[in-house]
Length: 117
Image 1 (cartoon, rainbow, N blue to C red):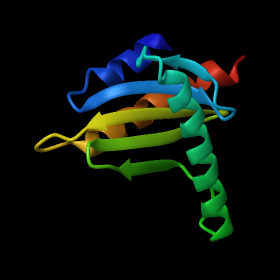
Image 2: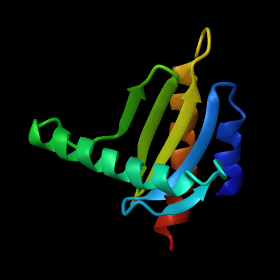
Image 3: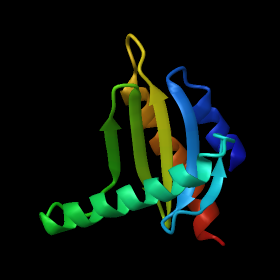
């Protein structure tokens, strides 16, 4: 799993990747900072709120969320009972589509690993 996450960090725009449980606990990550646990907990809360929101407005289950900020983006995707969170930095020509495609690929690779346990 570490190798899958590490491949995401090799994209130019990506500044960090974490895999977090819906309870907010970090499963794996590349941030390696004291803020990693806080980011994991807040990401799970945000994803849960977005999931509730999409259900309440009859748009179904959330698959992928992109939050744009002044400094970059936070992208989140559901992987079974986990959430893949990828942070990016603002660049002159960010390729967010590529980041999203690589996240989808990573999710397909991670899903069998987390559902077989």
